[in-house]
Length: 287
Image (cartoon, rainbow, N blue to C red; front, side, top):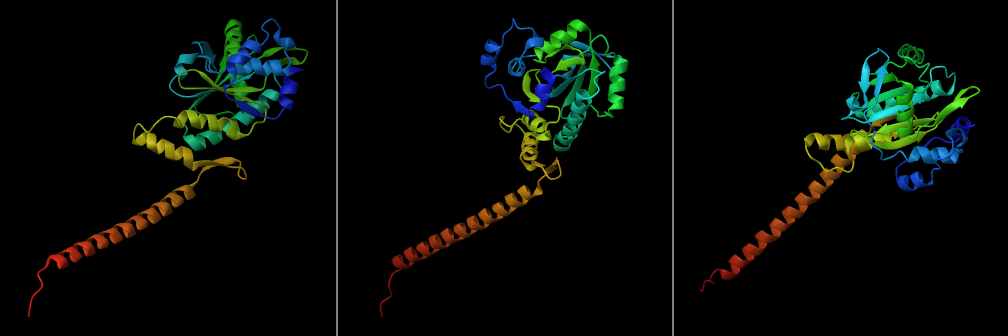
């Protein structure tokens, strides 16, 4: 059973280092229901680096929403089906905790979240809204989406998400996908009970732009927030580490004091040298 095997494994996340080779090794002729866990993970990882098309969905209020509406900020995507009694609620609660931690670290408007119902026949807007209410999800920027069968199939394929009918309902990957601000799949996270840093760290990379140079004062402030926001495993949440500022201030004071000392010593030597030269040039009086 695919989902039970995947959920039993430790939660983990992986970048796109070998996506190209994984695309080549994924057996396209094998039905998804016959995928081994290893093949399912390869299929999922092969999606990294892929640009999402402008899929259209309906949100829990019956409004049409396009993937292009999310461009400009990172997007976190999860899949559920509303009649799921265990794994989907667990995944959703785990994601909610990680989203709260990420918002604490980066701000409430730093990224968006979308949960898509993949049982297209049953996961209507009303049922998606009810699923959100039952699981107490009331977080700004988090939408619960439904779509027609063809859209859901194409969208799940694009994200490397595998699901198929089973006697108990559906078997599916336990997967959360991080998409960058340009609509490109950036990271896959696996497991129904993953640790918050697995989601927060890639989001920090995208929100704060760790590889980009300082383009403005605002950019510099973002970089400071990036390096000063750390995960506290005892509290199970992210916090702003003021000790880094204290260390920077103390270090700056030490370097500054050393600079003043060296400058004064250098200036004193110059003054003494000039005085000695003047003394040598001064005529000697004769008695």
